[in-house]
Amino acid sequence: MAKARAIVKRLKAVKNIRKITRTMELIATARFKKAMDRATEAAAYTKKIAEIVADLSNANLAFTHPLLVSHPVQNNAVLLVLTSNRGLCGGYNSSTLRQALSRLKELKQAYSVSVECSGRRGLAFLKYQQIDVDQQFTNFEDKPSYAEVERIADRYIEAYCAGKIDRLDIAYMRFESASRQSAVVETLLPIGSLSGASGSQSGNTDYEFLPSAGEILEEIVPAAFKARFFKCFLDAAVSEQIARRVAMKGATENAGDMIKSLSMQYNRARQSQITSELSEIIGGAAALDG
Image (cartoon, rainbow, N blue to C red):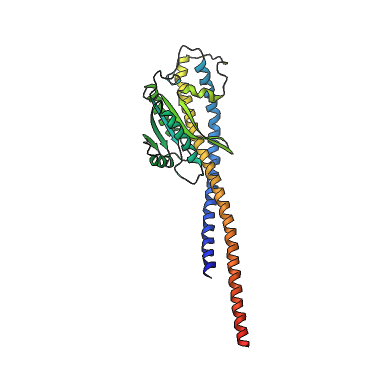
């Protein structure tokens, strides 16, 4: 009887866990749909503005922008790592952090590297690896606001234009589709590195500038950087929800399999107990008849 009771207790615990994982799966699904809508809406704008900047950066203009120009002497680099605040999202954080560590090792060979991190999971990992984090952010969830991201972007723009940093790399999970996400590290500054990602045929478009190329570049180049920077946060947010949804779906299915297995064990234990009780009753009745 004790064995059957232990199985019933464990069965109840697994059923409760399945309810929790199922609920988390549904929440992640709802958040994923909202985050994907934001990422999709931003993708078209980001791509087009990157194409324009790519064309302008390769055009023979008398005026240029500091963000388009690589510094002649490069000493300082920044590596920003985007991770999650919460766990239970499969290999989302580990994949991003693995790419970040690889790039950090590469950058240290030529730069003095400042590491910045968004997300408690990444901060905990970097602390465990004894890597100093100069700036940390824990306020970004599944809905990163443009205003918050823009403040960080403005700081990078100011530092790059002042010559305080010579390169900005960002490690994050890039959203490609609902079934495909990939951990990547991209160089966002100097902004000329965005040319290849835009897919534009640089140099094939002629522009007429009104009022002037200088005034337009002064506005459009920082806007292009901010748009690309913000999209990294949006991609990371939607990828996190996809990873959590997949992880929780797998956990729910595993809990269901465990419930079936425990139910069979309970039935066997109960059947064995009933058989034993019947044997005792039959034996007792036979003894009385004797």
